[in-house]
Image (tube, rainbow, N blue to C red; front, side):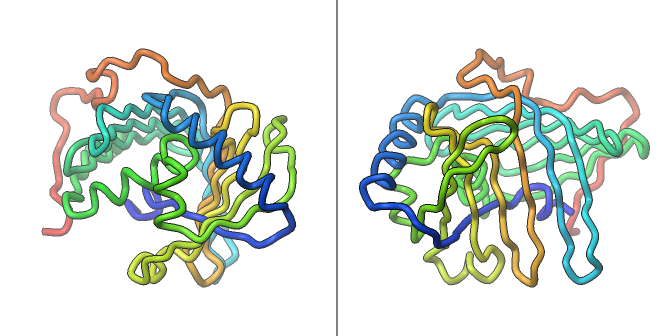
Length: 224
């Protein structure tokens, strides 16, 4: 469950000249340098190929990059069920209001990798992308009413490829930020995330990135 909620990545081979790709990557590089935080709405489709089902979730997202290796995130999902996920430091916490339960996951050894995935299309520099991915550019597409250019990223790390086959990004060329991400997990499974009403670099206090929990909530340490 946590893996489906957290892990993203990308790739796709279509037309697109090298100069055009260089221009888009340069714009993304500028945007990544300026990126500090974001807020907005999101819609996530988790597709399971073997049974042909889509799990659709929607809600809001807050992300803050405190420093290079310190990325904090809070997702509050409202549909189909209420759920909140906070990512900070070496742990992730998932709050399930109906069960009055917080599930706590130790992600210390994967913290930097997850932070990199959160920032794909927002705070990842061109140098980092070319270091970690084979990049291919697709064509222009309209996503959520925005003109975008699709690019594909194939992970170079064989360990990552075992779990994440490719990522597609739909990037708005006027801002250099992603409007949509698609993470291909193998076997036809994928996670498609579409962002709307994005605000880049809002002031987000640290307290806003923590779960708001009522008294009496149970805590369960996962993996023990």
